Image 1 (spheres, rainbow, N blue to C red):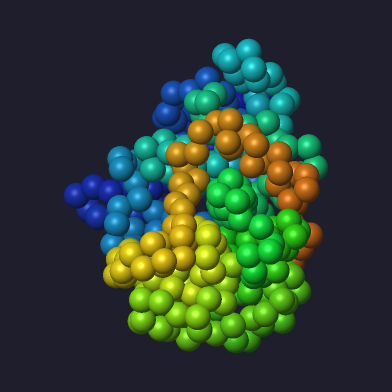
Image 2 (image 1 turned 90 degrees about the vertical axis):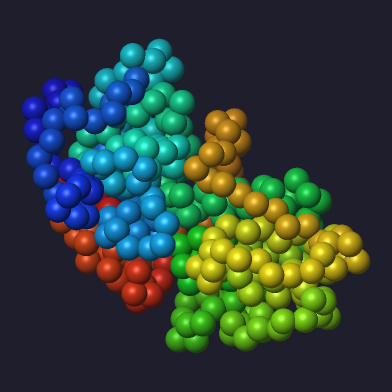
Length: 333
C-alpha cells in the first residue's frame, strides 16, 4: 500500500505560545523511527488521552513535544523491517510510550517499534480491540495479578471502584466472566441499571468506602481500585484475610494515608499494575485471554461513544467533566 505524502493527525504542541493541539497535516518522516508502519483503523479515548490532548491535570503526560496523541491503536501493517510482521497483518499496540515519549495512534499512519506491536488476538475485531484498549488490558491485567496471588471466588465479592469508567466497566464484565461476584462502587446512581447489565451483583454508593478507621468488618474478597486516596484505604480495611486489592488509578488522589494493620493482621495484599510497562510475554498472555475466555459479553453496551479524529476535543472535554460512562472509540478514516 502506498503511503501518502501527507495525512491529518491529531498533534500536540507546547511552545512559547502555550499548549495547543489539533488536526494538522504531517508526513511519515515526522513520526518517530520504528520497524513497523500501520494503517490505523481504530483507537480509543482514555483519561490519559484527555489529559494529554487538553494539557489539563496536575502531572505531565507528554514528555516531549510535538507528539501525535493516542495511547492505543489497532490497524494493518503496511511496511515492516522486522520479519515477525508482514504487510497485511492485523495488529494492535497499547501503552509502550505512545503519546508519552512516542507518536501515538491518533493518525491514519502510525510508526512503532516492533517490540510494542501485538498480533490482533483471535476472537477480536480491530474495533472490539479498541473498545478494550488500555482500559480492558488494565482490567484483565489486574485479574491476572490477583489470580497469581491465589485469589479465588471463595474469598468473596470483588469490589470495583470508579465502576462506570472505562476500566471499571470492563472490569465488572471481565471479572464476572471469570466466575467472580462483583460489587460495583460508583457515585453515579443513575447508572445502576447499566452496571447490573454488565454483571454487577450489587451496585453500591461511594460512602461504603467512607470509613477512616484502620480496620473494619471484612465484606469484600478483594477488588480493583481506580480511585486511590481514602477510598483505597477503606477498601483495604474491609478486605477479607488473604484477599487481594489491585491499585490501578488515582481519580480521588495519589496519597495513601493508612496503617499496616490490614497487611499484618489479615494478610491483605495491595498489588500494583502498570499497563504501559508490562513485559511483552505478559501483554501477549493478557490479550489472548481478552480474545478468549475473558472476552467481555457486553462490549457494545460498554462502547457508549464513537468519534472521528475531528471529534476528539469534545470527547476529551466530556470525559474530564465526568459526563461520560463506558468507552469511546475513535474511528480513523
